[in-house]
Image (cartoon, rainbow, N blue to C red; front, side, top):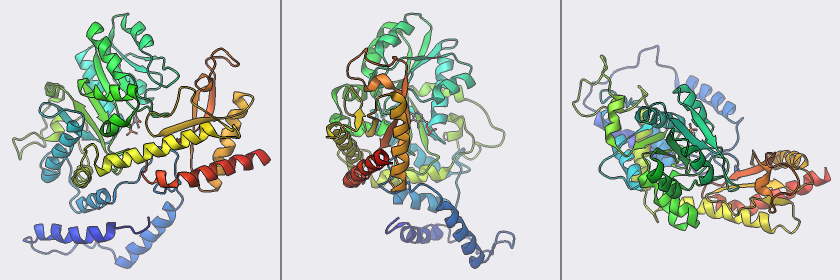
Amino acid sequence: MRNDPVPGLLARATKVLEAEFGRLPAFDAAPESAASTEEMARVLEATAHRLGDNYPNFHPLYAGQMLKPPHPVARAAYALAMTLNPNNHARDGGRASSEMEIEAVGEIARMFGWTETFLGHLTSSGTLANLEALWVAGQMAAGRRIVGSAQAHYTHQRISSVLKLDYTAVAADSRGRMSVKALETELRKGDVGTVVVTLGTTAIGAVDPLDLILDLRKRYGFRVHVDAAYGGYFRLISEDLDEPARRAYAAISEADSIVVDPHKHGLQPYGCGCVLFRDPAVGRFYKHDSPYTYFTSKQLHLGEISLECSRAGASAVALWATQQLLPLVPGGTFACGLARGRAAALELDRRLREDKNHRFVPLAAGPPELDIVVWRLNADTPERASELAQEVFVACAAEDLHLALVQLPESWFRTSAGTDGDASGHVTCLRSVLMKPEHEDWLDRIWVTLTAACAHVKEG
Ligand SMILES: *Cc1c(COP(=O)(O)O)cnc(C)c1O
């Protein structure tokens, strides 16, 4: 929160917006909506006190879940849009902001290699975006199953049940990637309509082998939905990733639909997901008439290609402004920010592996694919390792370092197969999502705090 530039930015832009509507006669707010500045200030101060009871998501020492503060320009643009509070359902509710949404979504599609023909829009979340993609998938392949990996986001199963589609989870390998072999076993049964391919799993940032799955599509014929809610933006630095992930990202334009969350890695306030379809003809599934809206323009109203009705125009405005400042191009400032978080993750993983005291057990299969690090604590049994993870988690938090916990298959941490423990057992691990560029500069501090917490736990 140091040197927050938003108030100054906002004051300047607000003057410009006021001038845009300057021809309107001045009016006084109704007594019901007016309140004294003093009263509002008091309420806001009480609000700030309440908000103090939160994890410091904006700070580099918050290195737990997928939380990244919105860019100052996104916050300012969102607040500016609040003057009008546009609704991107129809152009009546948000004329300018609908145009901005179309442009911003076009930039995201371009990042995935889609330029001319595609259909897409923003949604209130990745879950809603995935719901729309599976809703279309279900209509394209009625009565056929949806298949995802055991590491796919938990909402796919739930979305499928809402849509009354059968969902099957297939095994993930020890890298957290969908097992192509397990997938093919399902495909041979002949009733798979859609495969959900995750580029960047939520737990560990694993990248499913999209290229290999597309090879199977040639043989078995199915729809491919790419859930890149978390990992989509890594397309911009995919040349720097390890070979399997690079090949998966290179194939992304072959997908039938793609979901990405600007409110995760895209520096946006919450309420900003995005769904894209390669074939714009799927717009026919959304076709409906509305007795209330769609009158002011013959141009497409976004509500005509979206399952949701009202949607925050401010989300589109904030996204548009952010992409003006930080274009979605390889080598740009935004891409460099992603690379810095990833560098922090690789460095943390390296230190865990090289720890002289052997306190940590990293993933046996190798370093992280994106910017999420997971590790088990070294202990005689998985139960003791799980307890230790909890204790270190608490000890770190006491020193303002916030990590996360995750349950993962115990076998992922074993270098030699067939040793102790059964293959299906799980262990609680520490997890750190290093998604802020600042994490790179703070890695020493994170490491010192983590190792001190381990020493503290051991003595306690
Ligand atoms: C976060 C996430 C989702 C869900 O997105 P929300 O915006 O939280 O609804 C879906 N899939 C993946 C891979 C995710 O990481």
